[in-house]
Structures are given as C-alpha cells and as structure tokens.
Amino acid sequence: MSIEFENISKTYDQAPVLESINAEIASGEFFAVVGPSGCGKSTLLRMLAGLIDITSGVIKINGKQVNALPAKNRGLTMAFQDYALFPFLSVEDNIAFGLKARKMPIEEVKKRVDDALEMVDLSDFRERKPKDLSGGQRQRVALARAIASDAKICLMDEPLSNLDAQLRARMRSEIRGLQRKLGLTLIYVTHDQVEAMTMADHIMVLNDHQVQQIDTPLGIYNHPANEFVANFFGTPQINILSGVYEANDDQIVIDHDLKLSITEKLSRQNYKIGIRPNQLDFTAVGPGKGNATISDLSNLGSQTIVSALLDNGQTVRIIKEEQLLIDDQQRIKIFSKGTAFVFDPDKKTLAAVSLGSPI
Ligand SMILES: Nc1ncnc2c1ncn2[C@@H]1O[C@H](COP(=O)(O)OP(=O)(O)OP(=O)(O)O)[C@@H](O)[C@H]1O
Image 1: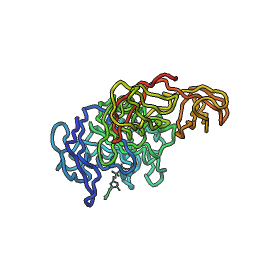
Image 2: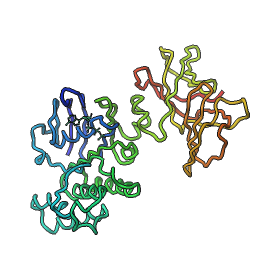
Image 3: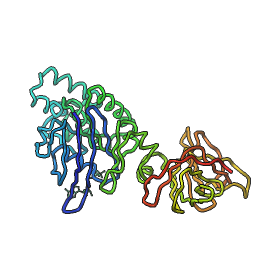
C-alpha cells in the first residue's frame, strides 16, 4: 500500500507545526521520519493515522484520498509511544483483540500472538495486565500488537525508546526483517539518526516545520542538502568550520594546512565547511610545529575520538580507527583525506569537494 502526502500543512492555534509537506512512500517501503524534538514527526504520523485533522493538503493511501476516512477504516496498525493498551485485558488478549474483531480464525490468531510475543520476548508475560508491566514491557506489547496485525501499513512512533540498548538492537533487526518478510509499508518515527540509518529505505528529515531532505540513508550521509542535515547524521558530529575563499587560487582556506581546492568559481568570501571526523587525520609533530594541539581523547575501544584546537581557534573532532595513546597537549599537524561540504550563507550545500593535499 503506497502513501502520498500532498502539500500537507498543520497549524495548532495558528502556530504552524508543518508546512507544505510532500512525500511519496512506495508500497513495502521502510520510511523513517526523523528530526529534533517538537519538529512535528508525531503530528505527521497522527494525521496519516486519522487521529487528528489536517489543516490543508491531501493524504492518499493507494492513490485514494483518505482525509475524511475514519482511523479504523484506513487499514493501518499503530505502535505509538503512548498508544493505550486496554487495561482490563491481559497481554495476549490485547494483542489478539484486533485480530478477533476482524474475525480471523482462532488458530491463526493464536499463532500470530505466539509469534509476536516470542519476538518481543514476552512469552512468559502473556497472562499479565498492563498495570503489572514496566514501561518498556508495555511498549513491547504495543509493538507485538502491531506485529501480529494483518494490516499492510504499520505506523510506529519511537517504538523502541524505553528499551535497553541490547534489546533495542535486537528489535531493530527483528522489525526490519519482519517488515521485509510481510511486505509492510512501515512509517517509523524516531529522533535517533542511527535507527533511521540502519533500518530505513528512505529517510525524511524534518526541521523548522519543513522537509529538509528525503533520500536513502547513504544519500543523506553523502549528499546532505544543507548544514542541518549534515549536522544531524553522523557520530561524532560533522565538523563545521569557517573558511575564506581565495579567488586567485580557487581555494577555500581553513588554515595554512587545511585548504580545499574548488573547481567551481564561488562568489562570496566566507563559507562554512563541513568535514566529517573520519575525513581528517593527523601526525604528531614537535613543539612549535604543526597547526593544532590535542585537547581531548575518548578511547572507545576500537576507535579513538580526538578533539583538537586549531591554531586559528577552531575546534575539530577526528576519528582514528585505533587505540591511540597520545598526550593531551601534543602538537599535531592535521590534514585531510577525503571530501568536505561547502555551505553557502543560507546553509544550503553548494558542493561536495575533495580536500586538497597537505602543503
Ligand atoms: N494538541 C496540540 N496543541 C497545540 N500544540 C501542539 C499539540 N500537539 C503538538 N503540539 C505542538 O506541535 C509541535 C510538534 O509536536 P510533535 O509531537 O508532532 O513533535 P515531535 O517531532 O513528534 O516531537 P518529539 O520527538 O518530542 O515527540 C510541538 O511544538 C508541540 O508542542
């Protein structure tokens, strides 16, 4: 089942929350919606579910406008962060409720409930009432209910937010596997860029009431539409540095060792440059040499994240794929080994450029 958002806007008490949202979601696609808290992710999902009104625009499911269709007739299933479970029903009855209501044969209901309970690790909790569960367990019941459903569109709003890291990692791949197997169209709201990157076919990035970019995970990482998107994806965060365009040499100069060769002519003098921490490297040098001083080291086991202060006052983060033992305050020479992004003053991406070799 495909989904289309056509010029969807939403205002609450005249305050805009979403402006002119356009997106097409293909049948069987895993579509993640990401953005910072309050950017309107849940609002978009709730409009699609039919739980709140659309201020203007059209939502289509399988090519048919559904603006006025009641939630229960939209053929969707939902696992929302606060989606209420029936307090008087046991865990298994909560999961089976919708299936029984649709007159599914009882053996089929039992199988689906069993499979779903196993998947979310709650087989031993089937008799319990929601009040006797932890927050994370309740969330898993809501997830199991969505998994067991036979709807072809599934909406999930931060479904893994209350789970511990291990279970969350397992659930990510279980949900992804199940979505593929059943051919579900899955709209998945999260503020977690890693979740979106690892699970989705396409990602919609929302901010400032608007769509910033819709692309594949690698498309977003490799070709961010603007500074916001570049900042949102990637751990540790991309470095945003100031550079000056020198028209004579067609270069953007960050400092005397960090220069970007630019093929296209740029008109303005000052630019923001985005360089991912894995696109920088350094060598240790003697006192008074190089272009930066190490200010902090975080050893993560297989990697080391290094913070360094460039002599011109800008701070950069660099990832080394090794356990690095080096002194704080060590002088280093930073150089580049890959691509960078040049942002114009409106924060749009002008170009992805190759960094010049060290001089
Ligand atoms: N019923 C309402 N009346 C007025 N404003 C609302 C209402 N519901 C949500 N909002 C506002 O709309 C904006 C978007 O809220 P929404 O819940 O969609 O954001 P979100 O991106 O899902 O955030 P989070 O990640 O924190 O859940 C917020 O500023 C919120 O305060």
